[in-house]
Image (cartoon, rainbow over all chains, first blue to last red; front, side):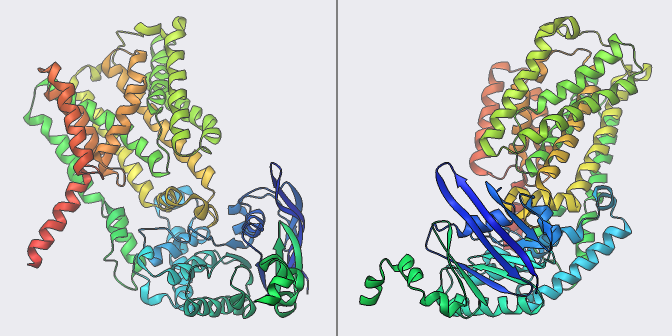
Length: 259
Length: 334
């Protein structure tokens, strides 16, 4: 199976700091790839580079056979590459449905004059976007809270809504930046099941997280980043047993053995 | 207003399409009512002085509402009066000095203001918060200095006086009032409709969370540049129409104080809804006129009013309305 996303030799240097350094990885169609690493390892920077939020110093990114290095986020969304954010997951003061509809912008926007005059095409697009959003909300179990103000909901709901926003653009691959951070074990399990349902829709997933239990139960493969570089990659069980990985997380292997 | 009621709630379940369409056209009746009142009151009050205040109100409403567009994308411009000046000077120079027909000169003024914004926008709209405020302030000063220093063209600090009326019919104050009312009603209808469209929803989204909006597929910078250009073209229209009404054009009218005035109109009225800048305009244009006989008191009273509004209605005068609504609801509930 050909890789959907291929990242080759990706680097981003902030002055002397190599936040991401010569990083290469790939995501296959329908795969869930986990990216883990200690704080400041460069996980979020890597996602920011691939999703176009910041430009790489060097390296290449290919998506569905097209070179996409350095393209702006809104162009990448149109090509089928969406993402969520760690902190700002939803628009505050709007209902869950309005949030989801904002994510569906590219299915809603018929051009300046068409939306200004509310032409038939604009109405058709709105009806269709509403249907897409309704289906998504139902699929990720948010229908019951659809008319509630998003930021009044518990954190777990907001994280799920963040995914709905990204999925509303109908992507082929979605990158999730710490979808389980700050959640209880129960909520994290719920988010994990949600991500598995996302994959069932035929969407590839890249997921960043700290939570080992969460990553283990979810990912096909795991990429470990340490100081901006790849430390290990492979099946979750193998990677998490790798002495190099344990050392990066817990100090020396000896120290880990004494725990 | 329609925008706000849509966010606050009471959207019927399952009927979203219907609800948004109702909310999107709900502004038409109150808007038409206000325009009708504005069209009828001069028949009762026939003092030219009062009618001129009305004309100024209509003109300034264009500026305040167009600045509101920029504010809704998340940027506070302190150089809006400079674009007012570009529209004004271009129109007047072409009309008076080059002898162009007035409509053509006005069109050129609008295009010049919009074109200047289109040229500068892509550079400055990448700045956020206080940096954008600072740069637009400096830009405004720069443009004003051009008006002052380019004496051979603009007449320098004295400006250009005795601008003839654009049309013989417009020598009457009442006729000019109706021209101002018509144009500002059209401009406002355009702005309200724009805010109720997908463009308006995208503007609110990018103000709240720019990165999230960009990653939801909205070309944020391109939208901001487009809105900035539209807003500056509209304020240029105000400039081109207002200069012949005032009969003179001088750089002082387009300085930082005027830009600040337009920001204050938005702040004092309320920045979340288009009603805000309109209330702010009435407040800031009419109040100084009422206090004209007490020049010393004018500034003091003006300042006190500002402080009171800021302290008790941080959301602007618009907030009075929603507070009143809540108060009444509570009474009924008892």
